[in-house]
Image 1 (cartoon, helix red, strand yellow):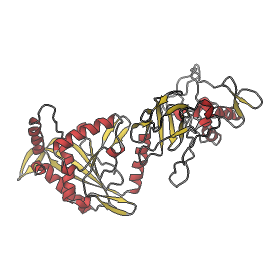
Image 2 (tube, rainbow, N blue to C red):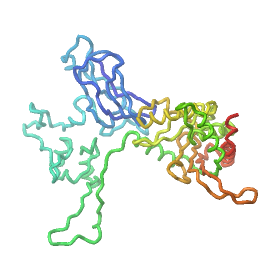
Image 3 (cartoon, rainbow, N blue to C red):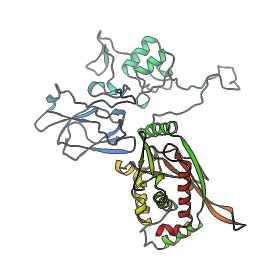
Image 4 (spheres, rainbow, N blue to C red):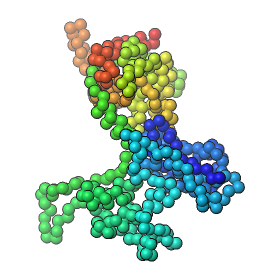
Length: 449
C-alpha cells in the first residue's frame, strides 16, 4: 500500500511552511534517513528525512509553494513491489488541518494535495484536455493566459482568468495575493467588491501635454513587492501581539566599561591561537546571566495568567539574518566560562545566519539581549520577546564626560535600556536588576569569582 508523506511540524509554533525544494524526483528509490526536501519554517530552513524506504511515486506539491499547512499530504511513496498502478485508486492521507486563532480550521488559498495544487486550480466546469489545456464541458478552451504591455505573462489561475473575463476585469490592473504574486479567485472577488489592491502605475501625460507638477490623486510611486517569508510572518505576528498585550515600560542605565574593555584585552591576549576571541557582547551575556541570579525575581515570564520563575539563566541573543531576527539561546549562561560562551555564541550565530538552527537552539530562553552597539546606536527600546518579562537593549560604548569625585573626567559609557512586562515585573525589581548588572559590568573581575 502506498505511503503518504505529509508536511511535518518542524517547530512548536509552525502551522504552515514553504516547500523550498525537492531533493528527489518521481521514480527515485529512497532509504530511511535519505533527505527528501527542504522546508522553510517560521524560524529556519530545515531538511525532511524519509522515515520509510520505497520509491517516489508522486510529488503532490510543487517546489517553491508557500503556505503548505502542517499535515498536508506532499508526497506519495510506493512500497517494494508496487508500481504506478497502485496510485490510481489511492487517496493521500492528510492529517487534521491546523487550527487558526479561534480554533477554526484555516481557509487560506493554501495548496491542496493532488489535483488541487496551485498550478492545477480549475473551476468545477473545467476539465483537463489531452493537450494539457483547460477546457469547459462544452469543449471550448478556457481563456488564454493574458500578458502585460511589456509582453510579460500575468500569473493567474484558470478560474481567476475565467472570472475576470466574465466580469470584464483587466488582470493587468490587479495585484495577486497567491504564491509568487499569482492572481487567484479571492482577488477577483475582492475586485468585484471594490476592495482589491491594484498595481501601481505611473500616469503618462498625453502627447503634447506637460507632466503635472504634482502627483495626481491616488498616485503611488513605483515599488517592488514580494510575499513575507515564514520567518517574517512569525516576527510580525509575535511582535504585534507583544506590543498589544504586554504593558511595556522602560528603564535606562549608563555603565562605564573601561575596566571591562581592559579585561577583555587581557583575556584575549592569553588565547592560544584561535582558541577564543572574546567580544564585548560575550561579557554582557555573562553579566546579564549573573545579574539574574542576584535578582531572580526578574528571571520570570507571564504565561496564561501565571508567573513562571526560572531556575537558570538561559540567555537569548538577537541575531540579524537575511530573513529577520532570530534569538539563539546560550543555556545556563550563569554556569559557563567566558571562553565557552564566546565559542558557543559564534557557532549559534553562524547557524542562525545560514538558517540551520534546530528548535532546541532557539526556543525556551528566559531573558533576551539585543545589542546594536556595533552599529553605533546610542540607545533604543526593544520589544519584549514573549513570554519573557525582560529584554535588555544595549547601545554603543562611547567616550563621554563623567563627573567623579567632583571632577570631570572622560570615560567609555554604554547605555542599556531594560524593556519590562509590567504584569510580571515591577519598576523596583527592574531597577534592582539594572543595578546588579551595572555593578558586574563596571567591576568585571567580579564575574570571574
